[in-house]
Image 1 (cartoon, rainbow, N blue to C red):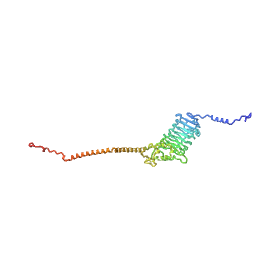
Image 2 (image 1 turned 30 degrees about the vertical axis):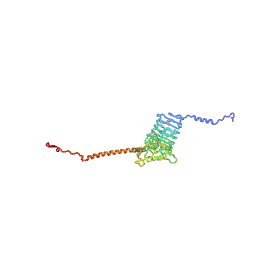
Image 3 (image 1 turned 135 degrees about the vertical axis):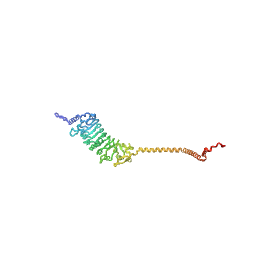
Image 4 (image 1 turned 45 degrees about the vertical axis):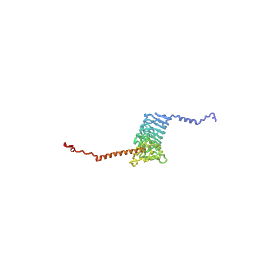
Length: 389
């Protein structure tokens, strides 16, 4: 219907809505932080790799950032609230300290980080993945990961080798509040034992313990890996560890054979000691070969130097060679039996002739008639000049 003359033309509600959307989209995006690279937009992915001059996390990260990567810097010390507006002394500038509420992934590899203080990651309530690999950590606060209630993945590969037992104890305390942790990476840290708190995380799905100094797992550690109820048991990566294949390894061998699917690299496990079992596949061993001398009350002791299968095979091969040589010798004797009989007969006749010659000489020497006449005295043979002889 055409509008009447003198009446204003009606306007539909579509135009004001389009204007509002255009105004919202026309807002300028937050700028990319200095010394960082933004991919897609600042809230998608930020990568900061500015070298040794970057000594603390950048403060101008957009508050709606989701992923932050800092690689190749010289952070050295992560102080309290380092990502929540904390100053150089670790004091928070903002009330509440929440500056990156949407950050879900934080990667801090190869940054020469040596110290992580308590509360270093305060103000990151949505953080789900944290990677501190390839940093020479020497000190870790017991409350370093406090407040990370949503953390699901923590990577500490090649980061704990220089800290010693004190760092391992601090790590055990720092892991205690991470009940939502699913993936934990501890590869390449020269660990002689696993942190007990890591084994007790209720929702842990995978623990990477490759390239360490683990000689085995104790029965207590194996029991800590079990879960009650409907919670799935975690997977364990153990390749490239110097396993000691003694009597103490029987529990680990039995556990692996009953739960091989929980150790994806079980076929790569090798014995490092004792010497006869060196480099033998761990799963191929017989429990009867895992023996100890001077066994302690806990079943640990020094392994017996048992002959390995290679040495036993060499003994068998040596015996077969000797048997073959003996068989060949007997065959040669059989094939030359007539010649040997002739040679034995000739030898016997020669020996008889020799003995007869000795016997004849003995008889000649013993005959008294062939004894030499004794010589007459010189006075009896002398004749007087008047004799006619």
